[in-house]
Length: 451
Image (cartoon, rainbow, N blue to C red; front, side):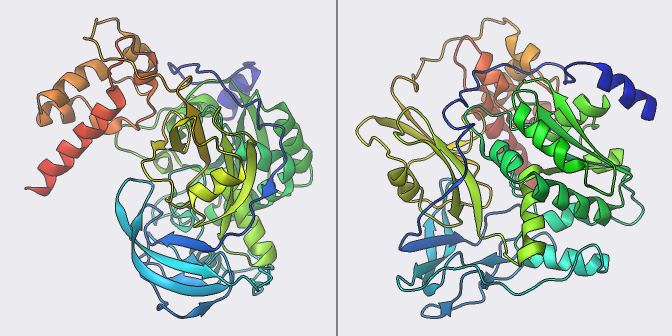
């Protein structure tokens, strides 16, 4: 493996096969320092904002809560705690709009207008001097999840199952989605936190070495991390990767760094590797330094319908409408608002949905940017095959979805699709391929649940 890595590092731009090159559109925010979003009056905290079991509430309406106090406990091993981002009063526990388009149970907290909202959190133990189980319990209690978008509970990734081992740990600093720059700013402004959090994760999983993959369009982030690594006790290497989408997907990142493929239906752990996001590592370090649980995160707010683009430190539960108002949303010109990135994010029908732990961006576009094209018949050009990073046949899968050929969808490995939308991006016929992939997955789940 060592010889292979040496050979890879001689390549000027390590990358994966296939993929696409959308316009980056990061210039409006990639040099803007992170600013703090002002506190607002009401915060909505969905009980389900991570992969796994929802978090059952442990508060009741009318109860006073402090900033950082837990309002929901983990609902199982694959679940985390949820905390109030402000000092205030629990207004209700009720169904509220969620960015996924559904009504979901949520704890609603009314902020106390007279509270200082200062950071005053209980001390936590030194993670490098504590038992592994103790550290894992603290990470779960802190509400920590992956901040790259998937929001997978961090303690689950850090707990290596019996019979498994981890040889390498990887941090994803690619941030390959257009427009988004929140991870970029975290790496530039808090490189020490990124490296310190990575050291904690390396220690927890028992990895021999660590690698941080960063796309080469973030030269300042690469320089900052390399300077911070010089003070790290465990071996960590910063790798500059080709600028290409979806370079930041787990499987693509491992292909770029190690030239190894995660088999169908398997995880990076099956290659003795674990992958986390740079923002997650920084948040873990900050938790063990200050005791502050995951109650806020950096969010990129941009798009041509936004007058004052920004990278904001936003309390979890803040309404998207309040964030956009703070950044100067041009109401009459906004045609579409997306939570997340333009490739994998979700267009919103209700701007009163809250910022979640996995919200990396809020993008607002005018009609000039959002141009709806009429769908045309497939011309068998093969561009979607050339774009798909996991070597699927999106055109054929789309036809199978339309005919509800569920057995064929499974045989053609639809479940390997991680919905990067590269196929939709290159399709000259404007076929909504990624949406059809999602429908197909729903057909497969429906078939399995009916058995």
